[in-house]
Length: 210
Image: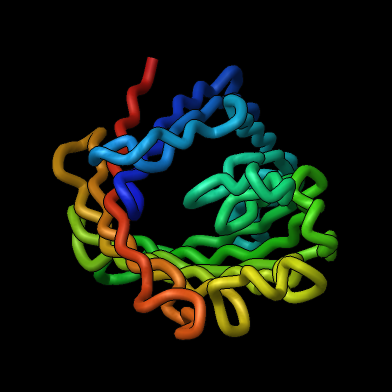
């Protein structure tokens, strides 16, 4: 569950069908909290992920997937048919983790192509990377960068809320073994002409094993 600006709320549910394949759906609305009219997302969004190659001590793991859930408000009235921040779409990513004296340290990078939110005229291939670092079994720091190459041309450039991509940071607290609470600080490279400040969000994740 992700609590967003302007009373927005997005919920999602993902299930591991096998040890390698994960399937999920998400849905939400802007203005869900407050007294403004609800702006529902146009449809449930999909999240598919398949791990192609397992990570080893010498080599990173490799996954492919599809994620159509963007972030923020969905713009439909002006025919753009896209979220404030575009979804990943199809992606390929690689990850490598190490054990440090403090805990786990992970590096991640990949490339993605969004084929659903292209009415703004920008359908370039994009890339992203990030890392996460544990300070202890409960607290982790997360940093990620989305180059937003599919939001820097044509109409997309005019409505972009970032300067040179999205830089996001988060503090994750593992409250209990299966429950994660994150305070996200998104769009740290915000465009002052479009927004007043970077975006703060609360994300709650519950994981259960069967």
